[in-house]
Image (tube, rainbow, N blue to C red):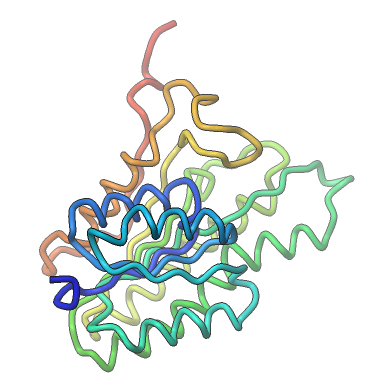
Length: 238
């Protein structure tokens, strides 16, 4: 059964939305998974948890290192087929203009935007050859439209990601490759120094994973350019 499934590449899989998506796909036995994340120990634990459900391959490392992308592609090339790429990896650095370290600015742009472009560029080579319908999902943030204080690099990277996705969607649609940006509001993860449980009323990573699953597996005749989602709790009256 495992050998018959297509594979999904998930970046940022050692925590947050990427980790939740890996579990969701594995327990539903919808796809084999290729997982990338920075935390090698967490990826090993996740593989041990999920390996009885689907095939799980892991590549630990920073996507800014193109050697890591090469390792992902080596695994992907040997898969039955690639059904989707989901880019969840991302970082944030928040500081005022006066104190903003330019190296940190460049790191945010490189991680959240440039490395995503590079990975898409490589994965599309496989998707084009296999000649099957496939989906690329880029996980963004409501910060791709709504700016907030001391987040110049983060907001710029996410806004760039959204428009890059739309541009590539136009280019790749004739090849049967769909692209979609999923832009959640607050999500209850470890992002920005917080831990799950510290964002009351926020979306759960599992809820976002379910939305991504729908985008990947809905009818191939449907093009979803962008999904914006938030928790209903934001409408609560205190």
